[in-house]
Figure (cartoon, rainbow, N blue to C red):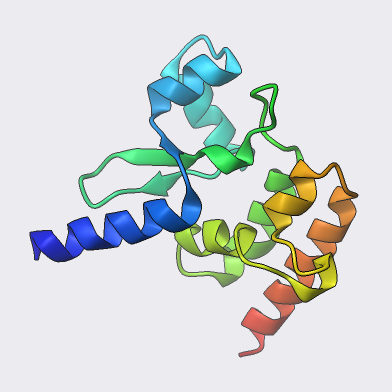
Length: 133
């Protein structure tokens, strides 16, 4: 069982890229406390992923070069959260290629400085498909 969990963690890390601890996020965004990070998660401004060990990690891809979270992450979480089984599905969606984004991932799209409204539109389309399947 433990080897399967380790394998699962390795697969997710390879797909999602770096995963940050709460302390690393706190330092990155200049938060005064861990509670400030928790508040951003509660406000859906940060995507948090629970681990099998009971910790929480945060995909590094949701942060811009200046360390601030992409504002559109909030909308994506609000749109997809009610129709997916776990936050890992939202993370996976953000890192999966979309034909309507020119074959790029939503995160690639944002990193290129493209219109974040297109990411919201894609999230709505995906949510609609998921809700009706």
